[in-house]
Image (cartoon, rainbow, N blue to C red; front, side, top):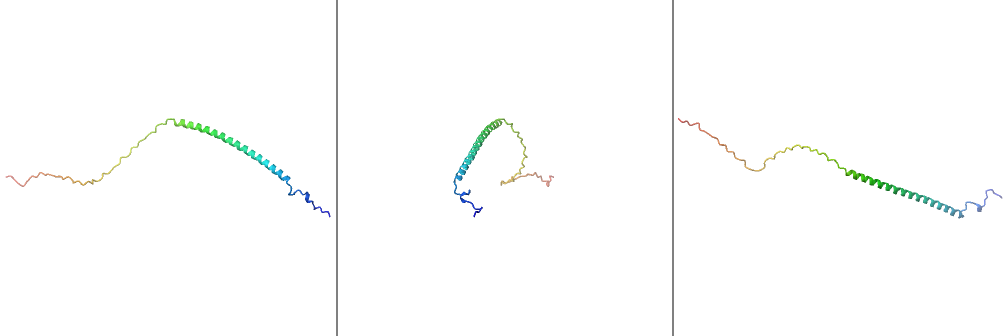
Length: 120
């Protein structure tokens, strides 16, 4: 009986035992990977070169700024105006005398005359 769905297994294209196709795809992958890595390394080198050029430019600008700062610092500055404010005088109370000295005795002498005697 001739079945149209009957196929020969030897001629199937999905046979897993074939290794010829596997090695060719691996080689193609490795070549693409090496090509990609080469491009990546080349871009990194150009970035590093650009960074070193920028670094040199910044160092040159830094030297110019330092020169400007030095020239500015050498300019004599005007003397500051000093304003002196008068402070109010402090009023101090005298502390009581705490020394124990005897007060000076005051002697008052009075001139008295006797008016009761008469000279007759």
